[in-house]
Amino acid sequence: MDSNSAIDPRIQHAGSFYQGSRKVLSTTVAREIVKQLSQVIEHHINIMDTEGIIISSTDPNRIGSLHGGAKKIIDEKLNELLIESDDEYVG
Image (cartoon, rainbow, N blue to C red; front, side, top):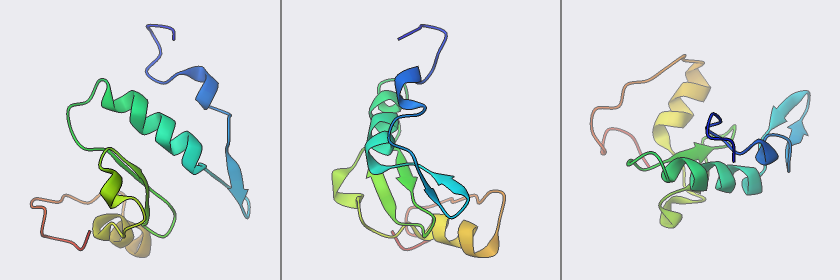
């Protein structure tokens, strides 16, 4: 991997698919992103689908569960959401 690149360029196009006209990550690509980011970020990482379901995570027990904060962002079309405690939202 190029030292100037944060994400391996091989995953930029591999495994993506479309939902309607919207490009969406496959779980394979999401797993690879989490794997690579976890090597440089010392925090938990989750990637959610368009419904707020966790499709990849540094915590395998969370995969398939709802991320309440992501669901709120999606439903309310928010640009961002500050979550101050782990029990603030479901998931």
